[in-house]
Image (cartoon, rainbow, N blue to C red; front, side, top):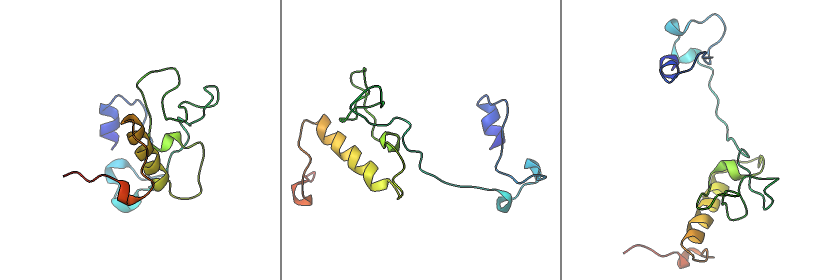
Length: 112
């Protein structure tokens, strides 16, 4: 991991290892890993001064650029955001196609 970061141009690399464990001697069990859902880095808000994208997930002030990932969620939901992100992406996809979002699964067209 350190070699990859340095090859990409990193000057300093902080690995998730406990103090005293040298990267060359590290074992998988030494890694201190975590996962999280970064939300709100491109928050949605109808007002450009309060958000990066508008209610249609279009980037404020730039035509043709849309964002449909966790970054548009304004803040932490307190639950896994997977369904919310999928709903945003589905709504955006239908909007870009100029179609209404289906209200039931029977309305979703199946490719033939």
